[in-house]
Length: 430
Image (cartoon, rainbow, N blue to C red; front, top):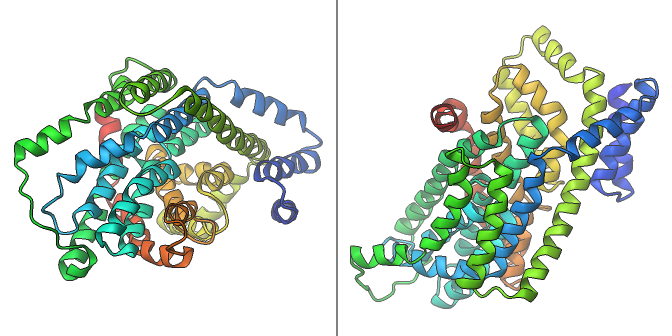
């Protein structure tokens, strides 16, 4: 009866085009009313407690920081500086796309912001030079997903807030997997370009000395300073994630005015867009908290664990089932909404089976990244299609991104076999 009510209510509310937060919250209230003897007042307490958490206030700050960096045009400077590093590597600017997405992800925390900022700079330039356009959009859509994994990450921040997991440790846990995925993307591009030289133009060879490359990299030192202002203060224990986010906002605004082309009009627009984004995220969080409260009171996760133990399933088969569910649901929901919607069941279920909560946070984030490049909802794909002015359609962009989709799945397998890739930094440096 419980599962019938849960699923039917979610499907019915979704069919009316109600916002996801409303669907989740209404489902939770119905469960509290009819399965917990009308204890709907418990939902108010749960929402109040979550919205008053100090760590949750970091979310709008990181959103503001990402919007400011997107509006200030700093991505152009980063792109120009890093392009010299790969000038003699087969694929040239295709590698630059991944590298810039990695750097920009370290200051935006958002997959969409990363894809939009880098794509707006890279696509016009690369299409004019004669790069294979499908390779270009594939690298931009795939590289954009790194914005969710490279800390500071909105996904890890929301995960930590909802599951009461250390956000500092989650950020540290995402560093090595994020860099590893970037290297995997670059390795794929290198192999493709070595096998098919028509994918990138043969330009006149320009020798750039090591000192020139170093000088070019040093020219973006303000970006490194911003990354340290956020991540460095957290790692060194100088500031909490919320305090570091505040420092990041101030630093990003200063950087935008002094080093970028930020104006007061653009800054006001950044605050407006950040408020809209946070409002949509916050609404989903409130609904998910109500649903989580109802599920927790009924002991659903514990019942699932007991059922799995009775069936004798290995925990890795359960993990595989969860991964399949995320991949399928990623076709229908945007990443952050999917995570918030599923955590009430997935987190207690998998941690109860012995999976580390920090490791799980990184795995869930990668699964969300997969959803970002899975049609028809895949938001990264839509962003890249918009960047190309619809020169490359959604279908062709999705096909071009399939190799990166598979590499993300391979990354999950690798992190499952070698969990220390996630846990080494949190266990030894925090």
